[in-house]
Image: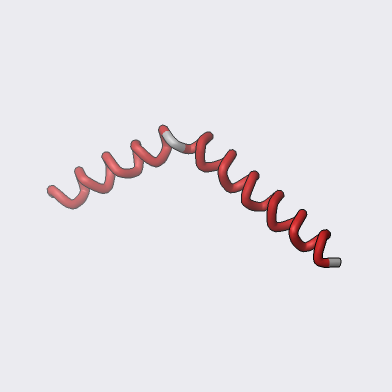
Length: 40
């Protein structure tokens, strides 16, 4: 039971950070595309 409670709390925490994560992934993806474009 403890594991399920911990997982639920962790998932809720990740969901609360969802937009920050989406923004971070977007920036990372954009920088990778830019680096690829610069490399030709």
